[in-house]
Image (tube, rainbow, N blue to C red; front, side, top):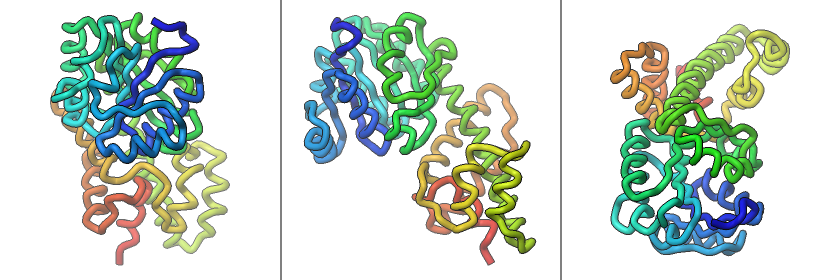
Length: 294
């Protein structure tokens, strides 16, 4: 393998997260080949940043030290790994696959087993921080995998992260991301209710948020979404459709492990209401919109 300062890397999936993440890898001096289901997006990435593109995951993955993926869901992940022209079929023994998709812990374990049978490493590494975090290189990355696979990939992931941590064996990263989304769901609903209440009470909402954000009620959501909630602007990040996908994963896992998620289940249904209002692509702070319906 190449020295740590220059790895041969493939990056599969150039959405709002993958596009800038792959660029950070290239800027850090790695050799990067990209693949995207819509080939024009890969061509756009190469035109803007350099590097190379490939027509299939297998071609992108051939001869690489590390293959990263950031795609939509479990089925998309299976397609780029073990599907027709999937990456696993072309990866060299000893190479490591790192999955940044928010997916189920079950698919992480399934694909890790498939990778192990081929002599490949596997790290599930979902991210938090949204598009802005990806663009600014300050994501939080929650990892599951062997200590050796994590140690080999952590310095590479660090180029677009503020925090990278191994939480345990394969699946631990996805389970931790579920905890993250569960916590966010409750916080956003509470903030929505607070903003809507303040509006009904005739208060200066921005002044209220400024005061209470300095105390126990303060949170990232309040600092970054409180004012835009008040203004009815919902184009600042993670879409409702994707949040519902993530909460569905959380609720399915809870049914398996016996955890009780009453608030998460309720907020998931509130997001369904937002979808029914046409807010599929609004960001998650749009929960406040359903409280303001006449």
